[in-house]
Length: 235
Image (cartoon, rainbow, N blue to C red; front, side, top):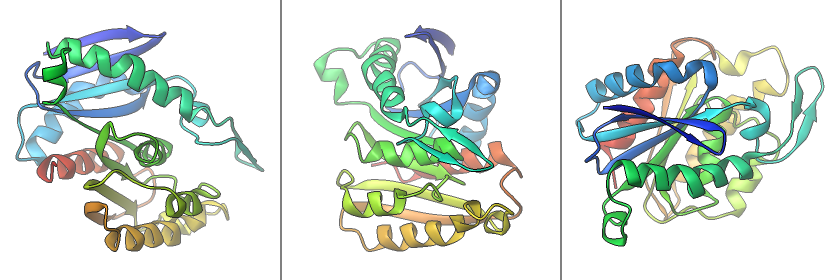
C-alpha cells in the first residue's frame, strides 16, 4: 500500500502495511521521493521483517533542514541549522499522520509502534542527532553520515541517547580520502563515535559497516542495508 500525505507543506510518502508495528522514517530530497517503494522492497528483501512501513519525509532545503546548528564552510556553503524545525515537523505532524494511516491513533495503539529513523549523508547526521532530542525513535541508521560536521562528536559525547538504542553506522572506504579537509575527518570521526557507542551502557547494539567506494557509490543500497539492520535488531 502506498499513500502520499501533505504535512505542513512537505510530502510524506508511506509505503508498506497499514498494520505495521515498525516504522522507518527517512528524510529524502523531493526528487528522490519516487524511490520510496523501491526502498521498501529492497529493505524487505534484506531483512527478516516483512510487516513494516517506510515513511519518506520530503526535505526541501538539504543543507538547511538537516543541519543541527548553523555554520559556513568556505568553499562548500552555508548550513542554516534548521534541523530542529524538521524534527518538529516529523514529530508533531508526521507521526500523527502515520498513526492515522495505521489506524492506531489512540493511546493503546501508540504502544504498539516502534519508530526508527535513518538517512544518507547529512540525513544520516540528522537521524543520529534526532536520537539525542527525543525518545520517539529507538534506533538510527547513519549511512555515510556527515559525522565530520564541526562539534558533533563533542555534542554526542556530552548528551544522552535513549536507553536500549540501536545505532547503525556505515562509511565508504574512500570517503576519508576526499579532497576537502573538512570531509577528510569523516573516517576518524566515525571510528571514534563507533568506539564510544560500543562501550555505552545505553546502546543495545551498534555496528560500523565499511562499504567499497566513495561517498556516491551505491547510495540507495547502502541506506537500505542500514534500515534492514535496524529491522533485524529491532528493540
